[in-house]
Length: 180
Image (cartoon, rainbow, N blue to C red):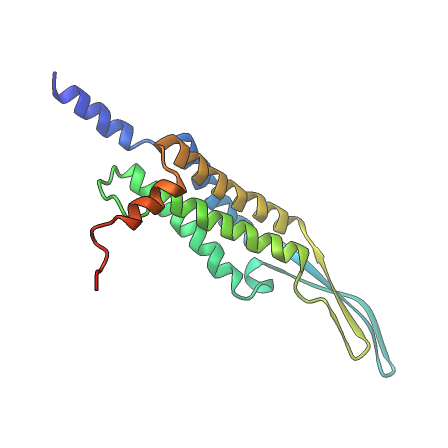
């Protein structure tokens, strides 16, 4: 009889809660959407006697963004890692709860994508040649997926009763702090 609650607790630890499922799906979708076209570049103008217009070139997140894909991959890795910790029933309890890390990295990813929506790469004029970047569907899908990661992390925080204030207080009073 005493082994039944232990089995149930183990079973419950190996299942994803709603927030965790949301951020895991968001992470997988963001990874997929990073391969969609995010921007389209239209080059038009004249160079001396050579006239050209409408030469299009675009790019996905990997091609069009410089350092931002590294941060997007960090958000994906943190979300997938946190979900795997839960699915494997790991007993490890890091100083910062995984749901908090997922919320922060998801929000950072969404913010970086939003900045690139407001300020797309490649705008400019170079010696009579105009380069205009237009937004494609992929960048908006990427933003939604990143927001899904952040929302899922926030919801997971609420489901486990964690808050930023509690984490800050716990880190502040941590006995592992080095005292000089």
